Amino acid sequence: MNRVELLSPAGNFEKLKIALTYGADAVYAGVSHFSLRLRSGKEFTYESFEEAIKYTHSLGKKIYVTINGFPFNSQIELLRKHIQKVALMNPDAFIVAAPGVIKLVREIAPDTPIHLSTQANVLNYLDAQVYWDLGVKRIIAAREVSLKDLQKIKEHLPNLELEVFVHGSMCFAYSGRCLISSLQSGRVSNRGSCANDCRFPYTMYAKNEESGTLFKVEQSEEGTHIMNAKDLNLSSHVDTILNSGVIDSLKIEGRTKSTYYVGITTKTYEKAIDDFYMQKFDASKYENELNTTKNRGFNDGYLIKRPFEKSGTQNLEDSISEGTHQVCAMVNEDGKGCLSKDKLEPNVMYELVLSDENIEEIENEFGRIFKKEMKWYIEFKKLQSEKGKVYRSIHSGNTNAIILPSKLPAFTFLRREL
Image (cartoon, helix red, strand yellow):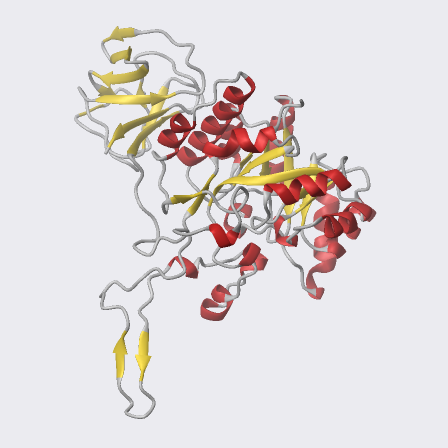
């Protein structure tokens, strides 16, 4: 059995490095408005994106480029130039949604593999066959598809790679085919500029046409999040997915989410995959860790259960909720200092989230690093910046790195339980 690939989001260069540091085998990212995450696409210039590709390859890992938007006629020549420019950077694949763009990629970059975006809504082997014949190497399955249907696709097309989403935001509309944002704010979701209108609170009214009486259906000043889907979390089903033997890649959604989200989700799913192959899978362990991230509540989507069997897939109370932990700081890439993400104080224990737990206990004038009940912690004796300034406390937004008692792995997170 070949080991499954873990594919993580890379909304910018820092998040790319974090994903790879915490165990991703591959990352996906985009540059410019042809990506379906316009905000994260703006995080990369062509120059920094080429550097990111070289960095990824230097670690022996892969990077897939998103060009999964749906172009208008006026943009096709610009898209052609974009593909030509990125193809010269030697990415490991293009993620494409539209048949015409598939043809364009094959014409411009015939040696670059093509992955079909989930936006193409592949649910069966007939559609999969069409895209295979067009030259697609991998299909990112529609989020509404079942594992049984993917097994059937693999039976008919054994050489076609299959990728599935296992974690992240879920869309209110079928496979992301949504017009709500376009209708309300003119931001077209399938062009990468979704305003997430489905996350907003709405107040519903009922009107009697004869009397003209208008009254609220929901008696709540805040309204209700009627279209707000819970987040996908398939960590407890990783063993079932891998036992099927048909999935080549597990994908985490979230290019616009936080650095902590990227690190924790990548580390947790990498651990779940490792445990599966070592025959010590423990679903509760992964669920507890993922609960530390901000989320909208979790559900297990449609891969394991059919849509008509599902209930409780929406969060009607709020659009986002705090996780069980607050991120307080993140260690710099050089490992010598950390930048605050919340409030840092001396003489307070902060749990360490490490990409590599091969560290040692230490105590000195700056503080101590120690292990307690199988977890690593740090406690500062003083908060001193690299420039020598000492703080009583330090808050998010302060750009002065605080000296650590000892060097720690890059991008280690300091957190506390809420």
